[in-house]
Image: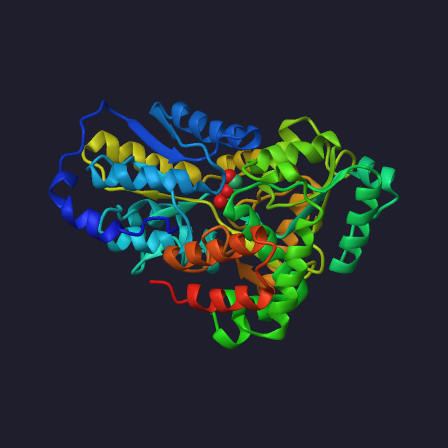
Length: 419
Ligand code: GAL
């Protein structure tokens, strides 16, 4: 499964229709996103109110489905039919793929006026540019390698927050004995890969992660370390419940919130769910780096790509949206709800909780130490076709009791070459 496998062909075929954008009234900005869970929706509302305060009309284009696969499918068909939204949540290398089709707008004017080059870490601004020109604007930095735990559940089981994978399985076993679901998990391939990449980082370290999953070096993908990673990953499955298949990530988080489950491996959008449920970090739930990954940081940057729009009013609304996203007010309000940290540098963190403060510190520290790595599960590292192929292998391995780590490694090596 790839995000938009036939994008180029489809777009070329419909180049003529691209010109026929539908007419709409002044100052309207249509924004495609997939933020529909409790915490996500609160964060999206911050964007909507920011735009409405500027007098623009917000046209919500929400496509449910964590991780955004459904949203990307819908986006593709909208662009192909010549009816692109003004802005869409697109991330990482996919931004380059869309820009290469010539459908994205150059927003250098807004970026220069706002001094974005000096307000964004280079690792972020590089992704927002195509051939040196801004085509997208970042809203946040999510950390993916987190473990969320319910302290009551751990207490009941006599377990402690694990700091490595051996301790993880000790805690999982104790939770199981206490009659709880040890690990809350859901059923989409991006959820499987979110767990997989945290295991890879924890078992193999940042250098291994980069070589195996980002550079996709065949020898590293086929190494003994990868075999250990896969075996450890598969062991996690024994501690998930039977109903995980098809479950959305936020429903898995809800199991931890309610104390039915003890732990969840998930990015910090999960914190948005805890907060939206009125839970207090450090008291009702605990955030910790995924086992063995305290000195590393898998980043996932949400951003909005701007599509070419026609009409001065629409262009104005789009530029205002881009500028508003980079404002300190928006970056604070949005990220307080989303669970992430601001993408913009030099922000005051006093209103943020300890999880966000730790994330912010670790983002800076790991950028220096070499522990900062892009998330594959969340579209930060590899072309979308490769990402889709790798996710498929990892999920097949997760779901097939008979597939050995060695089989999975062979398949990963060929998936890594997907075109
Ligand atoms: C990620 C996205 C996050 C979060 C998550 C679950 O890919 O970057 O913002 O929403 O999916 O939907």
